[in-house]
Image (cartoon, rainbow, N blue to C red; front, top):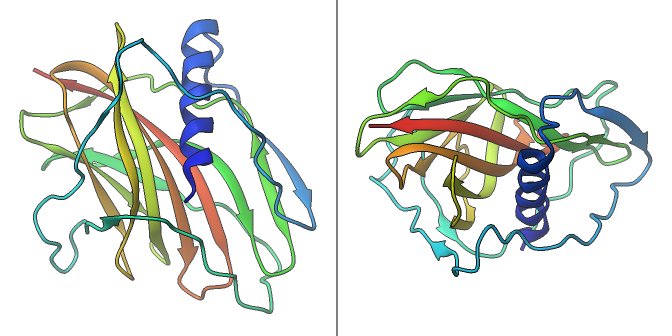
Length: 216
């Protein structure tokens, strides 16, 4: 299970909010092997125990966001030969039937059968909220030519403590979007960690996306 990615994202958000150091551009380093994540201190915004939130919503339909099932996940090995150049995919975010916009994303890493690139930097701090209505879900959509394999995440109030945990969820083949429950009213921050694969199966990527959500 890829829970270290969730822990790293949660720790980065906590440090970011405390030090007001968000928004810096990530630095990229290349290597011949995918780095092993370092151990991190678990995210603990308050003494209260986190609440796990079910991620199941309406069954997927063609062209819509799909839902998966919680469970252990190991990404498949990329196929060879590797492409000559690799860039991380982009994401958009939208709430309910609202317009989508580019998501605030920190690429975690991109790797092929023979190369890898790791991106280091703070988790971004959204500059403006995504406006949502009660009952909406937050949709993160990956660019064409990629599919989302698995995701996990959490949310917390913009002001105050307590977090809801979204457990790692493995997605059906061909998933282009995920739906994240909006569990709060007022202002909250939603953070997701996504593992994705290019359609030709020659490139894998993981990334952390953050959205500021406002619900009346």
